[in-house]
Length: 101
Image (cartoon, rainbow, N blue to C red; front, side):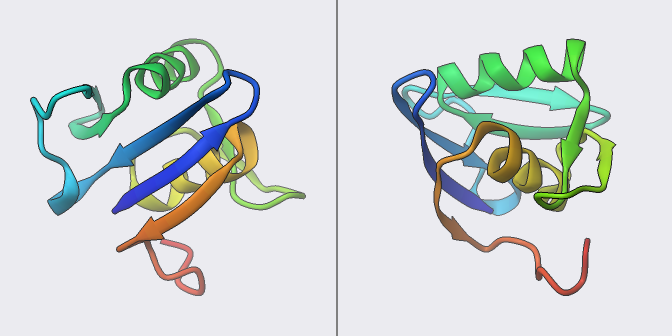
């Protein structure tokens, strides 16, 4: 999955890459690994994700919930980006919204 967005609170754009889109070591990116899953993100988003995993490890899957444990699985991290970070602009190769997985 490839997600681009803009975080108004931090005043910066972000990119998150998972699965086949993730290229560790790409210029201007950092990796975040949790429970055996690795994602690649812009430095600001990587820092925010590490902080969330350490201190507030929950994500919303919709505006009114449910609140679930934060993981780096596509469906969950995409919910975290949409409903906690905000500013999602594009999603390429994301999970099927109807599947919930």
